[in-house]
Structure formats: structure tokens, C-alpha cells
Image (cartoon, rainbow, N blue to C red):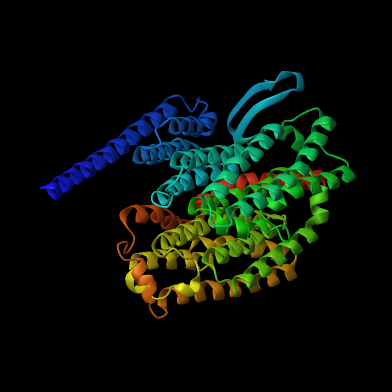
Length: 538
């Protein structure tokens, strides 16, 4: 009789959970429909960017006051908040004017009157795409952490939401001081995510990550202050229109380089990344790979290229050489990795080398390819880290040698992993192909030798990714692995729904890249025309 009561109560709890999920999803759908309708009626005369920035902060505060015993409520609350944030970001995509390079959805308020510092926000065809990517990946970070995180749950989800706020704040800021505040604010929740919920060496990795990025940011702060006192303005758009003396450009180029190169990370400032990726929880790795390291490349596009064009052109050979070293070095190191996460982490060093190679080719194809590859890398590498996290939940090991025969017991998982593997090595028809093609085309126009050397890494990339897949999925089945996954089996519905959006993005962008290239086309042309007008490129 007692067992029957337990079963009955379990069914009631399951039914209540299903009803809660349905109610929350319906509420999100209705609320999102109302919001979108309101934007359409008001002609988007609504502080949508501020709403996107501060809604997760309010959500994190709400989660913080929930009783820690209500774990399911905390998780569902984080899910609803992140989904609603994604819905709030859709008007940026649906109502964006692709025919202009001007900043859109502008918000501007006087913040510190005595210094003329403003709270100024806006997005163009470059930054808007990263806001959308960040909103999507935040939802997936919530879902993938459902079973992985089992301590300090509300603090974890609050940290995820606060990290999202800081990251999109970077992409929206049009004031250098506001930009710096969001840039530094991101360090705190990310440090906590790695340091509290990471692996055995989490403290070492968190401190290393913090020191590298913080020290680099101090150089950028010096550069910001120089710009402010030289011009008397903190408006990024105004600072772009000023022609600075060449020597000043050169010093400022390196000041901002210190912050952005660490964040990318460019060789040889990359050593914090593999440690942080390896020790971070799955959601932390997704945030690092998907968005955080893109902030460095975005900084080059927003500051170094438009503000210091002559210095950028003169440093172009040096930056392209560093990029190619990162591409080849990262690919070769992947061949000897024994840990799944470290292999994917070093592949990020190689892929981000392609991004900076395209950016510093300083032509339309290279820069567009670099931006597109930043987005592609966020999708593909974020998905690979999600896959590794799901496998780790089952076997509790990341060593490649401990696996084998996964395809025989997890066919759906194997199909998803193969999709992301092929995208990572740039197979035509996937999103990875068009980005790398544009980058190599742009680099070939800028410096043929660097393009040829970078292309060799495509062969190495195919070698390490296909070899990884062969060892994990097709070699003789490991009995120890089978014992570990007993009770888990193949992907459940939550995990499938987590990976499916990214798999669809791989195919969608692969066959229809103009869906993203159309956003950035005018903005990139304007950036190049600006450099030409300054006289840096003739």
C-alpha cells in the first residue's frame, strides 16, 4: 500500500510538473505575442535595448529571493526568463533596416553631466547578430545545466543571467565608459561560474582567466582615458570621425590590442582559454566559446579599425602572421589532445585565428567572412561543448580513450555530433564552409602566402575532428562506458531540444548565408569606406 502511495504521489508530481511547463510556455508565448504586437503598433518607440539589458538583471534578482529548496521552481524560472529574453530580442531581427549602416534602436540619456558621459545604446548590422546569438545560447545554457548543476542552483542561474546582461551590454554600448563597465562586469559572474561550479582545478583556472583578462583591460582603460582627455568626448561614434596623429594611433592600437587579443584569444595570449574551458561547467564553456571570446574580435572592429586606421594598416602584416600562427598551432595541438574539452578548446584558438585573419585582411570578403565565422564558431563550438557535457553526464570522464562504440548505444547523439563535426571542419553545405571560404578569399587578396598557409590548417582540422569521431563513436565498444550510461541511454527530449536549434542553424546558414551576410553588408562597406576616406588604404 505504501509503494502504491509513492507511485500515486509521483504521478501527481509529474502531472503538476507537466502542467507547470505548459502554463509557463503558454504564458511566454502570449506575453511574447503581446510584446511583439506592441512594438509593431508603436513603431518600435520603446527602449528595447535597455529592456534587453536589464530584464535578466531583474530575473536574476527574482531567482535570488526564491527559497533554495525550490530547485525545480528556480530552474523553470530561469528557463522562462531566458526564453522571454530571446523573444524580446526578436524585434531586433524582424525590424532591422539592412539598407543603412547607421546605429538603430538608439537610446541616449545624459549619465554624468559634468563629464558629458552618456548612457548611449544602439546596434548596427554587426552587433545586432551577436545580441541574438547571445540570447539563444543563454536559453541553451539553462537547459543543459538542468541535471549537471546540483549545488548553489539559484546562484548559478543568477550568474548565467548576469553574464548575459554584461555581454549584450558590450555589443550595444556607444559610449566608451559604458562599454568598459559592461566589459569588466562580465568578469565577475564568469569568474564565479568557473570558480564555484567548475572541475578539480577550477580555482586555478578562474584566477588565471581573471588575471589575464583584467590586466589586458587595464591597458584598454588607459587608452580610453587618453581618448577622452584628447577629444573631450566619450561618444564612440564621434571618436570614430576624428583623425588622430599617427604616433598616437600606434600607441592606442596597442593599448586596445592588449585587451582584445587576450579575449579572442590570439597566440601567444591564449593559454588561459584551454584551462578555463576544461574546468568550466558545460554552460560556462558554451558562454566562453559562443560569445565571450567574440567580444575581442568585435572590439577590433569597433575600435582599432575605425579609430586607428593608419596604425591598423601598418600593423596588418604582423596581425595576419599572428593569426596564421594561431590557426596552425591550434590545429596541431588538437592532434595530441587526450581530453575532449581541451581538444575543442584548442580548436577554438585555431578557428578564432581565422576570424582575426579575415578582419585584418581589411577587405570586404575578409571582414564579412570573419564576422560570419564568429557567429558560426559560436553555433558550432557551443554545440560541441553541449555535446561533451551531455556525454560527461553519463560517463563522468572527458578522456577520449575511455570511450568507444558510442554510435551503437546513442544513435541520435551520434547524428548530432557528426553534424557539428562536419560543420567544424567546414564541409560545403554547413555554416562553417562559407565563413572560411570568404576569409581565405579575403586573405588571398591581401597576402597570398598567409592564405595558403592558413588553408593547410583545414586539412589538419579535418584530421583531428574525424579522428576524434572515429575513436569515440566507432571503435570497439567500451564495457565501462556502457555501464556508466545505464539508466541514461540516448538523448532525452530536453537534450534534443537543446541541440536541435543549433543543428538547424548549421544547415540554414550553410545553404542561406545571406540571412546573416545581408545584415552586415552595408556596415562592413561603410567601415572600409571610412578607412579609405581617412587615407589609410588607397
